[in-house]
Image (cartoon, rainbow, N blue to C red; front, side):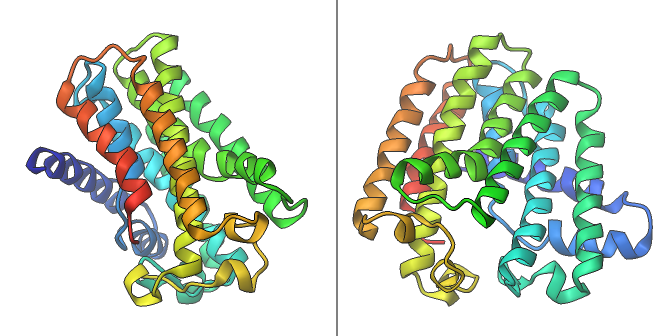
Length: 280
């Protein structure tokens, strides 16, 4: 666990350095408010661990990891505007703190900083661009052609959440100069972890205590959002079982990877368990 914390500290240190380098005092303050307001740093940790699993180093992958965290943060700014959520990660959301216009500019600023980190590698840029296309389709689907059954929900979850998780792991593999099969296997692992994460997120929104969760609950029902609880007839317990199935399939995908660092791989396995069992 100490080694994992050191990896997270490396990510946090680099993230702070990137945020500190944002030009314009106003934009820097707003980007800092969003990017440094907490969060589990799951996606950048996946990037680093994926890289180490296949023979790279944490230092090889940290810029890509910070980049994917910035993309994720930018998407949360937009999510909070759409959902009219005034709280994020236990603090005021960007639009509630600064207004809608500055929040949108903040999201753009986060994306700009992210792609500056990806720009040195065309493969990395392509992976993230493809993930953002999927994310955009998912967000549009959620707002218009809402899913009506479990299959359609799972497609939405893969686009809305799985795509960025996939990109996070693929970036790690790219940083380690892996072959295409390894990139794909790690991508599938992370995508399934992301889907499990989204299912569990929906369950927590339906049943968790807002104070413990760090954000308001009941939003899915109030806004008629297509959560697993709203779209399907699954009980929260049954939905958790679906998340478990995705996590198990993620582990199966990880089995296809030639492992260079068994400790890093162990943490990836533990993450697949964590996303199913987490309470916030």
